[in-house]
Image (tube, rainbow, N blue to C red):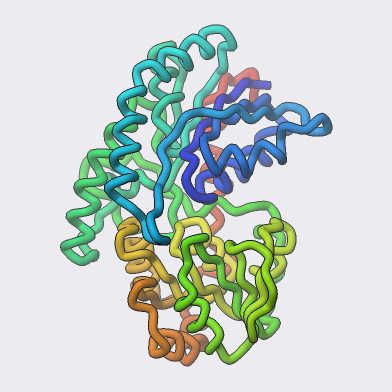
Length: 362
């Protein structure tokens, strides 16, 4: 049995969902301590910091956060607060290094979180990077529009700021273009899938699933009411039904059941939700915010694969919805080559295990 320290970004549920997937596979073999900021801590702590859950502990860690003004991503505020976070990086790394020296983990795994891996390198502890964001520097993105290629280049500097010397870089993504020159050692894996998703037997029960951000406007909801079938909305909390729209609290089991049985997905364009949709064979109408460039990139690859369509949520109109619904049959045909075949769990776990002490492997 090895001791693994595992950290993640705290914005959105994608990072925490990937970490939970790996944790569920590793916790029966090894001791894990999860370091989680913001929403990731709020998601994982109630699951693992319980008396009946042994072998896993969740600890809070400072982290970057997106900020919203009038329901729109506020890049200025997000960057300003981010600079404050970076200003405290040295102190946070030193404090975390002291913890590592005291507790002596065998391996550090990081999902786009800079403090723990930087502390690990100071202590001589091996590091595996397992995330999605490294695609910005390692993937050939020449098929994207010039504006998004420029964004990828600029954000690549942020990704590199997270970098330390590491034993392995693993990129989890629903799209797998060629690697750029010089990145041949990067391991490409598919989406990291929750156990319930892996076990699911997808069907089409005659409703649309919509997973949206809290900042979603009333105009978007009015358009969703024009769907030709019921729409189950997650992400806005419980509220009274509004025509064909019903609103549901995030309950993992129920959400997975609805994901498995929906006809299609409409909503945000995070890598995790798109990856699960493609694995389950669900067409997607992606609605990224125009200022959320990473989701814009995801949306472009979604369309290139022929498994869905997209429009910036600020431009969402009835014509986009009708075109998507009319194209469901074609999207399902294109999804056939991916459905049930994109599970990135086995190669990701293999990449982690190969860097554990040999006497800890089972």
